[in-house]
Image (cartoon, rainbow, N blue to C red; front, side):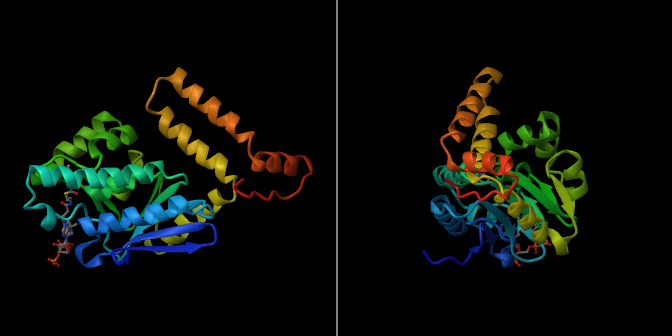
Length: 260
Ligand code: DAK
């Protein structure tokens, strides 16, 4: 598949995905969603990539939501199909076996905010703006907003943002825990890549298992969650990287992880 709306670049052990429809503020039409799906599939199979950065092309938007002009005339069945397509891809990002950092460079509205929330970590430029404007368009958030936003910022704040369609700036997003960090626009990508590189220095399988344990553990009761952690902890001892990490510590030398 030829990619034009979504770009993928690799830089040693990290990958950068760029949503690339700046004329329409990187909004998500079905073509873009299908390209994103393809890119995620490529990354799922790439054992040399340990962390991913996801950003938007241009200076204005990360992703300004689902494409309203495409959605406008959908019937009930087509609307459901569009929603299922987006949800399947966002879930695929959430379950990807490497951390994904959203570098939010501008508007992250509707499906754009939902895309950022499907990532593990969000770093925002001071120019970023977040919101779920769907009820103002006569729809509910359709790509997980009603589910992920309350899990990230708490039920009360999520309800306020979703019911009012308020658009909040990066500093407010930081205050409510929607983003991890706010930086100047010129250094956003650099900061996100630096964090990705820092993650990529650690044992990739251990990082992957942490993502799995946190994501699955947050959905179940604490006893089951601790079982998930114990199982993933045990799995580490079947890896060469666990032996390498501990041996390097004892021998006081640099570690050399191999994702094995
Ligand atoms: N869709 C399509 N085109 C968009 C767009 C969008 N979401 N956002 C912007 N654009 C296009 C504009 O139409 C314009 O195109 P031209 O007129 O130049 O051809 C170009 O991008 C530049 O936008 P503006 O001229 O409007 O730029 P401004 O700086 O004046 O305003 C803005 C920027 C971000 C405030 C404004 O563009 C805006 O309000 N955009 C819409 C934001 C929004 O409401 N986003 C949420 C979309 S709803 C579901 C599945 C999914 C969803 C729901 C249900 N199921 C089926 C279950 C998700 C829904 C959403 O995401």
